[in-house]
Length: 619
Image (cartoon, rainbow, N blue to C red):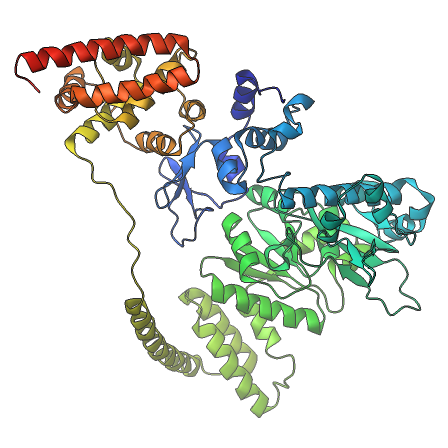
């Protein structure tokens, strides 16, 4: 059985990170007042109702209600247990935990013990084997020389975990010797199955590039043939889709890029993973690449959650320019919030080739300084197959580019492009402006029709109403009082000194009892620390709700007395006795003798008060 992670270790891990920095790797956060806001990662929304309080080190979504500290964030995001979340945060903070806190007993069924967890574990082992073969064996020597020739050094090879799958097909024997279940191996995507049911390595004779999920775990591979001569096999071979690998939901290097966004303020979208590696060699770590497919809605969502700016940097050839145009169109249709730029590489050259010709520093400069707006890109792209000196082609081009300019919301930016057209084609600006207004009028008319259609569709769909609790006077008093008690020691001890005071509702009373336990070992209240004392989901949400209450710095004891009076008047003894008996049952169940004794005394006293009320005609 695993050793429980000590409280002092949990406290160390929690205090070693800033929740805003951690969540900022997963959600694009913007300052507004005291808090940071972004789009909630736990449900689909367009408005930024997800809040991070850096002072209290907690998060809260006002829409779905989820909230908590940094551990709870990972528990919700990755569906893992509390100990696993502690380990995850420790890894991100580069805190070394003793091995006894990282044993299998800490692993929940939703992670490594699940099918997904087992498949990830096998991919991690495969990546380590391939990397070892590349770096330390004769079989990997030719592949290593190939990578050196491409300009990579050992640091880059190690950073990306690049490996080599030899012709000998060593992976299946490697797992077979470890007695890994045959059916499990079939589901990895690492093997091909012949007609007799025998498994064979899918990858052989290939340089292996691990593909990772957003948490940095290997979930697939892309293998490049070391020798492309005299073969019909594809130059690149990717893992098939599996339980853990979906091309639509995967971006190469996203696990690294999302961490660097807080410094770079952008993500660079490259055409292939070799371009990403080249950029990393140049010190640009915010690059990602889609998995050999057109950009997908899921991939755009991934990027939009962590950044507000995307630079599209595809190859400078015709295919690359066509891909750039498609990417701009797809992103623009899906997101109105993302700022888009284009970094066009010189014709016929990609970032990897650029480094080989000009050096790493020059590539970094190019990626920073060769930006252009999507419209500036279109002004060149739409000319590519036209002879604009010819009147027919020139008119066709002007009609096309004016439609693009008409969609630019900024009037100053529009004016810049119109002036360029005036200069280039010796045109009258007023004529262009008139044509632009006509295009806008047509667009507006079309948009009006589409809005009407959308309204009809919305009216036909049922409206989902979210339950909003209406608080009565008693609950409002309980919320304010407990919030004051947690944040003000004078109020805490004042209320605690009231004999036979109980909160009217069980949830507040239970939270009060948990706070007593917390203050028995803590002199100062910290919301993110107290949160870990609460196991119940509803109580966790109640505690986060309390933290959202705005309270004055100066506390009036008269107001405290008012809250107490409201609560006491609405707290029937019968309800209190029932709640205390339930708590007594729990204390007995868990063998808490001290609490059991104190609760027994409380129940006896309450029953005595009830009897006295009955004898005097009270209720």
